Image 1 (cartoon, one colour):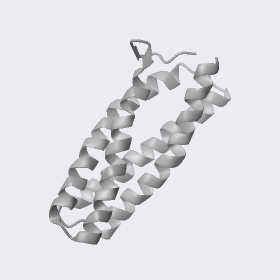
Image 2: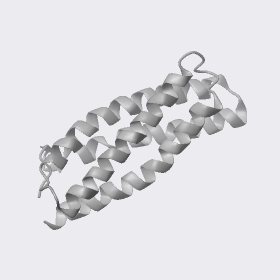
Image 3: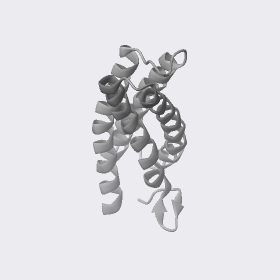
Image 4: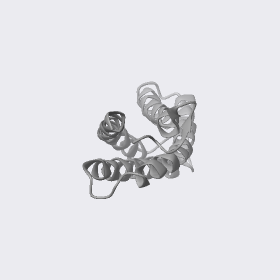
Length: 141
């Protein structure tokens, strides 16, 4: 089975997902740097990285959803895709909540906002593994 949306033979979802993954993971590292250094600029960068990552994740998820809907129901690939997509939806919610908690004072994020980001990053390890599992299955079919 091939991905539904493709550009020059490459799956659009797999092309787009690297941006939100990179942005969201990097935001957490900027949070850690802010905790160590206390520089407001670091916290502001983390804030905007989260904003861009959540928007990029929403865009990538549209293509992922289109691919998942093409997988026959009841198959292992369909179940893995459901967990992958559901987990990434949760990642988006965690980061969106983190961003919302920062709105009033983006240069001074609360510990809860940073903890939500940390949880989001940890969850992406699992959802990324599930996505790779799907991509491998798609190549074999």
